[in-house]
Image (cartoon, rainbow, N blue to C red; front, side, top):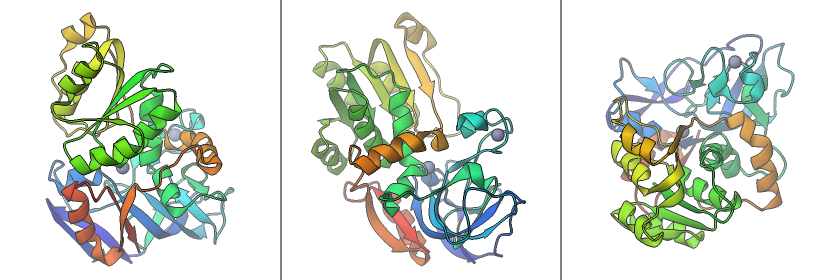
Length: 341
Ligand SMILES: [Zn+2]
Ligand SMILES: [Zn+2]
């Protein structure tokens, strides 16, 4: 089969690899129909994570079940399924909460080494009854792909930001996760959402969705717009030292900073005393993907939640290198790339 692999910074290619086998009696094989390129894939592309060997990339997949183990109950060959980007064992008390981060064995993410990459013809999925869901009626391929990661992450970012009804929220970083988060923030009761990014085109997208764009420097703009007080809740959808520092500076005393941006491997120098004196709540979250599905699917099906316009580019799998170049440009015109095997 074909699989997108990365050899080193900026070096993505389509490799030929053996077809994956079932991981066990609870596993399935999915023929991938569509896979997303995620901002966190770009950590490999930008050279922030060292690679001991080429890594098969991708953790956002929608596709057709082509093989099932004998213990699989919820899906069958031929079903269209979406695969959670974050995987758990499916059998422990942590996984029973629907949050793979609580898995006793620890969460795993497809396309980062141990599990295969989703940007491929085929993907082996362990504990399929926990990891996948048959794509529900009325859910588009784009929506299903966003449900595997970015929308679940944006939703969790807002849920964990303690947004007061009628409150002010600042979202730092307007990639796919940030744009999902700002929509979720409104749905969860925010009256005002400030949207910060360095790219004008992305500020325009946020404004079109009802957010208040703030230019650089974002902290000063948020403070000025809130009478010097700061936002009730700040969502960091970037995950750099700079964005974390901005988030902690832009939140009001007693407010909450909710981080879903994926940091590099270096420690962050937390200004603990300032945070204590300002009674800041700081939360860092990997999306409880499976647990968000009942809520998000109903909101999408009802039309109350709209995530159209987040995918801006669709390419065949063979053009993955171009897809990564487009995603890596982080431009206003290009937010998110879909690869079609
Ligand atoms: Zn991701
Ligand atoms: Zn588990």
